[in-house]
Amino acid sequence: MTNLRIETVNISALSFDPTNARKHDSKNIDAIAGSLKLFGQRKPIVVTAANVIVAGNGTVEAAKSLGWAEVSIVRIPVDWTPEMVKAYALADNRTAELAEWDAKVLADQLIELDAVGWDVFEFGFAELQPPTNPNFLPDENDQPRLDQFSPVICPSCNFQWRVDAKGNIEKA
Image (cartoon, rainbow, N blue to C red; front, top):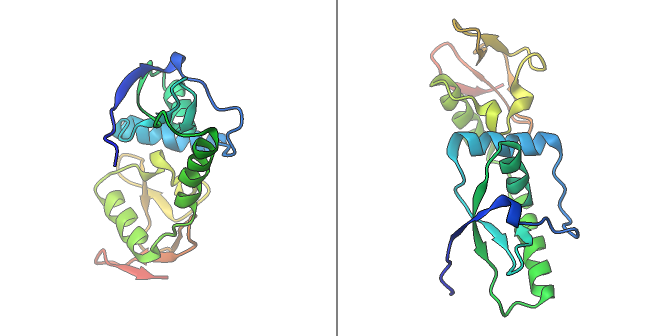
């Protein structure tokens, strides 16, 4: 195993791969940007020796939208062939797609985070936000909160749940 050396580079020094097979719509970029605002960059962008982005195109695009000047990167090994680079880029994107949500755990975590005031909409759960979901009601600060008596449908896995009067999560 090769040790990774993380570098900080100016975003303007990076270029997007024109053959990148993965596309990011504005909803995806907004979710990535929300995550970056909340948590910062927690994993490096993977680039070639020539600073072409191999993995992390969406993150760089989101960082640019936030006005960031720099990101952390790691470089692919210099002995990789162009085919290895291409295969890695595809594998990096595909492996995440093959995972699925544990609907019960996701519901539990969304409810817990909502209960303590986290804005889960900021990092990609915007489908749950009003006015598209009438199961969110404003709290005392006019912020959306889960209506404990109406079912909520997860946009990612279609699991339906509600919170009972005691705060317990139950399948709807």
